[in-house]
Length: 293
Image (cartoon, rainbow, N blue to C red; front, side):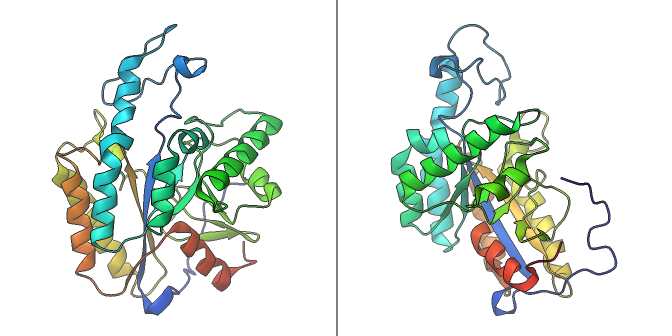
């Protein structure tokens, strides 16, 4: 993965979205529940990053497991209802072990027309992982999600840090059309015939974590709407894509879900917005810009 700091400088691509839309909006719902590191699951340690950061070492952590349990028990239903109200399709970026633990949710996502993509087997970074191990994880995750959903996934996003081999391994696998392992643009780009769909950590409910700046639902909606309004304006003359990151256990809380509902209502007031899955965005981009790097 070579570093490119120039991007589209001086030559940004023109809008190309279906129906003449000036902005593609991608809602990404991360599904990590059941895949967080847990000694009770046989992992080497427990996950400790959540709203209260306290690592339990050397023993199972039922408290952390319970925190993650909120997502499938309550959070998913609220997020799903909010999206359905506005006919918005999302990409559910799902860990393989989460898909294995939550087959009923996976099947409901597909039934509602959402995309299920790959988010690693466990919820972990791949930095420093050897190529053989990582290739096995990629293959295992792809196979499990295809088995549980009945639809072969085409997208990948590693939890934060990838290895230097990740993108090459995704290409070698043969089942992936795109990855979201980039944070460097508001425009998709090609790596050969592979599409890179940049993701975002700012327009993301992860900022509800302590010190992350979001406290009230309106903190999330105000920030995301500000990003939307700017990209929508810029999209009149250049291709623009917006990623909005969500998590079952975070935005799905009662005091936060209103932030997502406000964002969806705001977007609905604008013409020329294409809310699409990342699979759909990658397909259109490849058709328009395939073979360009």
